[in-house]
Amino acid sequence: QVQLVESGGGLVQAGGSLTLSCAPSGRTFSNYDMAWFRQAPGTEREFVAAISWSGSSIYYGDSVKGRFTISRGNAKNTISLQMNSLKSEDTAVYYCAAPHSVAAVPSDHKEYDYWGQGTQVTVSA
Image (cartoon, rainbow, N blue to C red):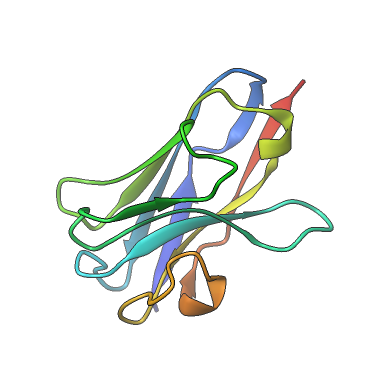
C-alpha cells in the first residue's frame, strides 16, 4: 500500500520556524513531482508549494512566497518544507501529495493522487 507520511508539525509562535518532512512508503517517488497543500477549518485546500522530480522547477503559492522553501532529499524520494516567519494565518493541516505521473498544473490539488494523513501546524499570535 502506497503511503505518504508527514512529520514535523506542531505549535510555534508567530515569527518562528518549522520544518515539515514527507516520506513515502510502498513505492518510490523519486521520479515524480511532489507538493504541499494545506487546509484550515472551513476553507478549501490551498496550494503551498510544489517541486518537480528533478528539483529544477519549484512553485509557491502567493501567500507563502519568500517565507517557505520546498526541497527534495538527496535520494529525491523525500521532500521538506522549511517554513519561516510564520503567521497565524499559516495555521492549518499540511498535506504532502504526489501524482500518478506528472502534475500538469502543479497548484491544482486534483492533479494529485496520493495524499498523506496531514500534520497540524498551529501558529500562535
